Structure formats: structure tokens, C-alpha cells
Length: 247
Image (cartoon, rainbow, N blue to C red; front, side, top):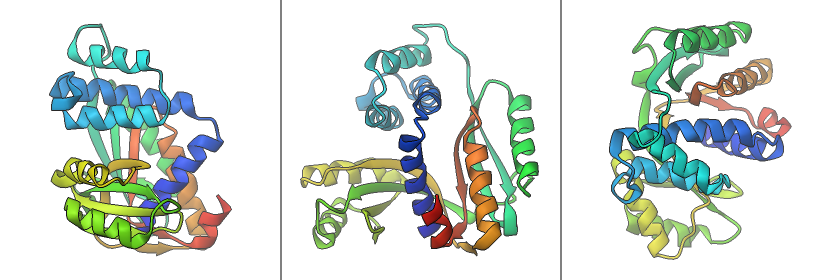
């Protein structure tokens, strides 16, 4: 868990520091469109859409962009038909990678992923080669400067969370996938503001990676997540603190 949550925090900081709003908006628009297509355009009745809209609002996406993406998903506006496709592979030191994509051209997507992996000492695996190592979990982040650990722990347990982790600047509330939205609601009802939240594939066991392997892995994760069709990359790596601190 530690490796994934630390990488999630690094990604959010880099997105702000590198001014990658355009790329972030592109990915969020695809997610909103697919969520609306699959579950309808009413966010109150569609948890996936509600999460996508919350994430878009947190990234300060204009309201018009969100509304257009929903209408493309529901068919009110013409749009591209994106498919959800996952890929599995390996990075440096045999680290497992689970890659989520939304694509309108699988041939283009798999070619781009294979190219990125090949440049950074990675390889594409077969379906099922690493997926069994991951569990679907909700991850809810709370600003640690605003609350005590005891207060967040009590609220999280009352809301039905599985676990609380102290990540330094943030507390990480871990939930089962089916409890994700109810735990968010429970935290809010108890006066705990949520900094961000996501559904993620979390490794059951982690592989410690350090030194040059860790640097290569970080470069690979960035290269993959910079691809337009890639939504999220999950790994079972526990990256050493020195490498993370250098990012």
C-alpha cells in the first residue's frame, strides 16, 4: 500500500508543479464521458460519474467542459466512443504493472505502451499475468495539518473504512471498493473534509525498489501516464524514500 499511496501523492504534486492541466483535463473528460455512457448522466444516481466530477472540480476544470463531456456520454452531443482496456506488464526489477486505459484505437494504445515499456527496461505481459496481485480499493486522502490522527481514525472507523495510514502530510483512509462512496459520505457527515479520493488497484504485496532501478521505474511510470490513452498505472513497487524525495 505504501508504495502506491506515495506515488499517488507525487503525481498530484507534479501535476500542479508542471502545469499539466491540459493533459489532466483530457483524461478526466474521457472518464466523465465513459461514466455517463455506462451509468447515465445523473451524478446522484451514478457513483462513478460523481467521483469523476468531484475530481474534475478539484482540478478546477470549467463547468462547461464537464457538462459537454456528460452530454457526449449520454449521446446528447456527438463524441468519440472510448473503450476501457487494461494492460499488464513488468518494470525494472520485475515490478508488476497494471495499466488502465480509455481508448478509441487499441492498436495505437498497445503500440504506445509497448514502446514506453521497451525504452525503460519494461515489458508487456499477457492478460492475467499480474492482475491477480492487485485488489480494488478506495483511497481517501485527508489533510493531516487540519485534523489529529485519532480524530480521523475515529471518523473513518465509524464510516466503515478498513484502515487508516499516516502518510506524513496526509492521512490515507482505505476502503473496500463497494464501501468507497459511503465512507466518503460518512467522513463528510462527521465534519472531515476530503482532499482527494480515488478507486485504485492496490498490490497485495510490495517489492522494494531502490537506486537506479527506482529511478528507472519512476521514469517509466511517468512515461506511461503521459500517454493520452492511459488513465492510471498501478504497481506493486515500494519505492525508496531517497528517490521519492528527489522527485
